[in-house]
Image (cartoon, rainbow, N blue to C red; front, side, top):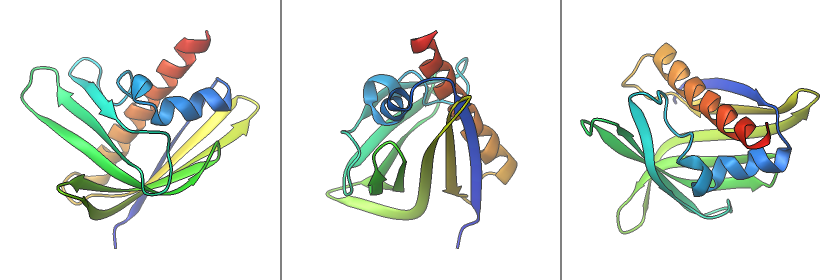
Length: 149
């Protein structure tokens, strides 16, 4: 069983805006990377979250030296409150890799607290995984708040 890691960020924007930016490909391309100088998200595909729905986000080094598709299938969705998905890959059908991501959205006086708990992978050190996932959430915050400032 994988170790669970948790990251969070508070976004000063309406809940509906934060929720939409989390899953909508039109927004994902603006925030789904850890380091804006060296990484980008050239495309994302997916529909509004629903159990069984699949989405893919392409993450690439800007110099073209490396890239990967983050593909997942929603396993639980409570609109404006939480979503869970299992990471995997698409072949003729979705292949479940067994790593789960749980995301919650909580309204607070400062905005919306977004918390992601994910199964650690065994390639990179935990602190590197936490730093990367935190950086991505910070990019989400920057993007969403830029829509409302």
